[in-house]
Image (cartoon, rainbow, N blue to C red; front, side, top):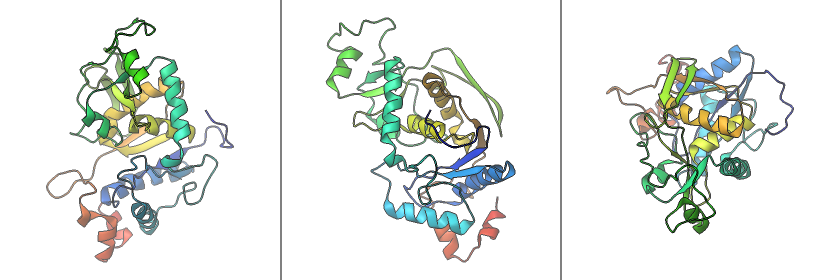
Length: 293
């Protein structure tokens, strides 16, 4: 854990939007809950620019994100625009932190190389959503426990690792229940190997997965409570394993119910009509929009 001047025991919440599109009303509601919880604790609110996905993150979306958040009434104490004690606050500038964490996982033999499932690799950069989570990995590249990596066969994981053309998966403890108490939904319990399988933490192009990056950032930014959508409940089980492997204490979690459209579908960035920018253009005020919460 990096040193900082942050007082021990102080509440630290965060907003972590991704600049891959315009923010919509669902983002605003979840972020508003995060801000309200930070204010209630007289804590600090951190804004982080989760621009890990370089192919989809755009500078114009980053500018729009900051403008729309300010217009809606958000105020943060640390962030990419104002700095702070745990800078930088953009994921694109934090690669060395992710690389150090990955090396810790590899040294502890928590991960193994894998050369299959391109779709999982593409999905690994983004936070999964309800109904879109990756299938349980069948273990195609998973090495047997106790295998001797010094004598690799042509198709062994050690041989793949030496080739450098592999992704890396976290080996979950099959049969172990991962439990936590969510601040909104109460007790949660997921079975490793059944509810979720071995997941990607590092891509062959040298980019960390969403799961690893968010754990590293929340830990090194000393976030004490993560407020986000309920579609990430299962991701929390994965992330708790990473916290444990890295020797870090996890934060508390509060997963908010999702805002849906008139048909009951979860709001997404493709819902341009419900983006904060579009709603603002229609003459709606932040106060009117907050009444919809």
